[in-house]
Length: 166
Image 1 (cartoon, rainbow, N blue to C red):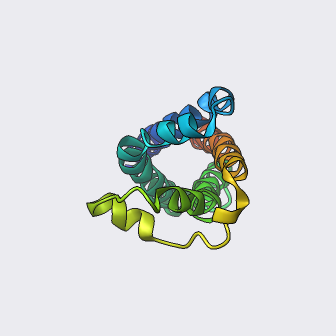
Image 2: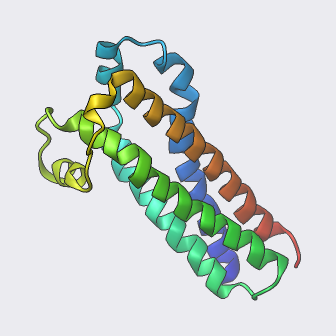
Image 3: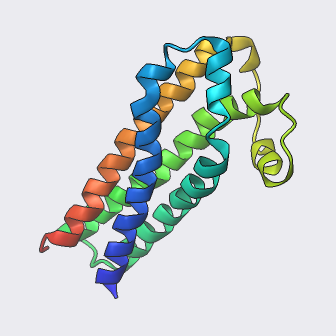
């Protein structure tokens, strides 16, 4: 049972890494875009990144937490999996505290419908519109780079826990 959960957690965190690393890898190119091109580019993310990336974030937290519960307390495996869980939960918090308010600001005038509209209505964007588009862009881009690093570290920890004895 625990081996299956380890493999599942590794796969889920790997899917999450694909989305966070994707954002980080395109950052140098996107930082060169003017305002109009940048905002046009941002809209391509919502369908796949919101649904697939969002699901992978939640599932990575659940899978790593399940591993924490099932792993013997105090073992090396336990500490590795606990680290992966804490990183998964923290990178999700970074999304809601740093990234989502920027997204919310950007979609205010787009007229989203259905699930997309409901998702972006969550939380608030207080004070961000006055920051200017470049400040918002920088906040969004650098937060995603940090999230990619956190996801890579979580994947390394959960994978290491699966292969080490202890």
